[in-house]
Length: 78
Image (cartoon, rainbow, N blue to C red; front, side, top):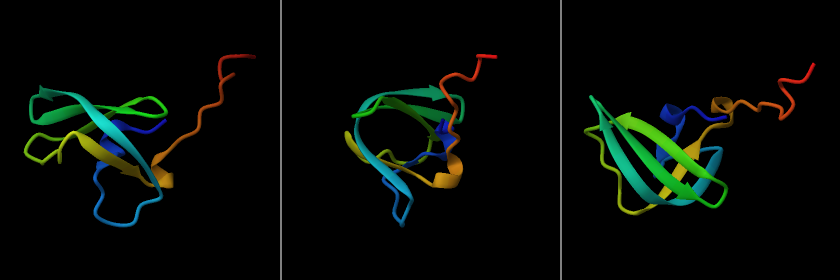
């Protein structure tokens, strides 16, 4: 799991993980902008301050390994 606010749009520096995607939609939520991006693995949601630029329809998403948490598929089984 990756928290949406930890995903960076078009990262300008070296980052552990990257994936390309296409802008699917945006929603303003107060001072925040929720950005929906279609990627090859799944749709991802990015949250950033609404004054920041998105950068076009074709986007690169990036995040650091320390920002990820792996949740086992059988987490609810005894």
